[in-house]
Figure 1: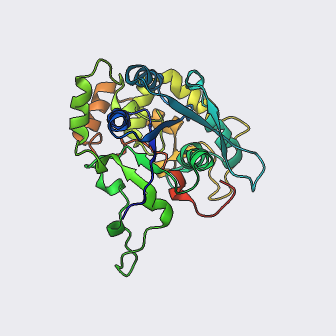
Figure 2 (figure 1 turned 45 degrees about the vertical axis):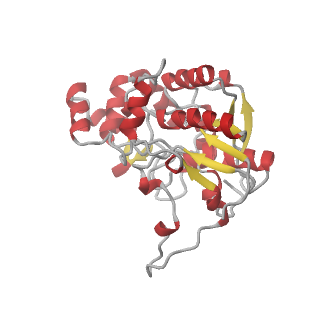
Figure 3 (figure 1 turned 90 degrees about the vertical axis):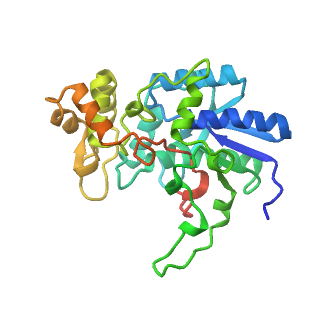
Length: 309
């Protein structure tokens, strides 16, 4: 039996799926008289059109959006916090990303600390401060066609094929799939009928040069947004970025197969944009379940008891 909790925190990542969830919750809020808060965690690394879309969502859906940016103390042993900012302060300045890198070094596929430090922990701390731990539902924009991203008791299997008990903190997380049966194409079709949309190719979505993207998507993003690529490379090579303590890799090695953004750009220099785009499309790398999906603020799902986070 579910606990009686009237507080609902809806995570808005800036993408179409979570924006649809925001719309759906506005209808639910009006019908059921529940307390709903919409939260956006700004990494400072989104595409400018993502920020434009977020502003349109706020204006057209007439919602109040709480915007958070991470606060990274340089002292070790002191974890990230948050600051509430105005929506107008959310922009592609890479500042939150740089703040994380100055303390922890750059993220990698093996250690994707960026989402944890810039989204999950700040959102978790803000909500716990405001509502109290376990006194709100956390809603993530994960659809029915993204079952691998939904944590259920059946999926928590140990090496002996025994079902694990879900930690209490995870039992207060819900997904768009809990209240909607729309899949990716359904969401895209829904947005085609709206007065505004996210004007952004999917390979540019979320963080433009996200470490979860394959090399071909990164290369295509660099071809489409060369000035952004230069800016991102400059941030990675900032002398204030911390050196990694493990594996001895320099900070610019962030992507699969020990690649840097510079090496990926160079490797795909001789391939024209349309050829590269077709490779991605034919390889179905924009389908559900691919690395085109957004990074969500998973709140304290990552809580491992460490203070230095």
